[in-house]
Length: 136
Image (cartoon, rainbow, N blue to C red):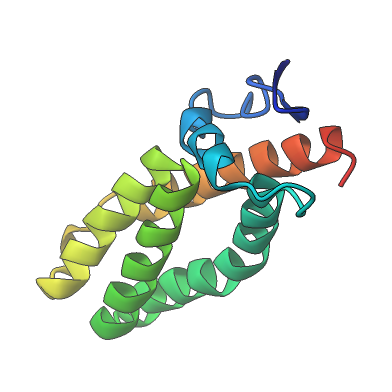
């Protein structure tokens, strides 16, 4: 386990999917940390855990209903969120889904719905483990 300014980050926290999180993205945010304030990285992981659920639900619903607008919007928003917290692989898959929605090419999604679910599950597991280790 690595500790950055007292924040324990288990680099194996993404063991279900190696590399699910680029922890250096969250570590880089340490410079924004205000003395005495709650840990910014903990807050960001917690916010991700809460806000990503409806976005993933939107992606799933859009794929089932062939709703290109919902897919585009949900995938775009989740992509941006992922990239800001280091979930780079999940963000890349969301970018692909966003483009499929923009192009109205849901038939070209292939295995992306399965991949997005797998990577999402890995990111959630990694963040939950990191938060548990931080005592949050």
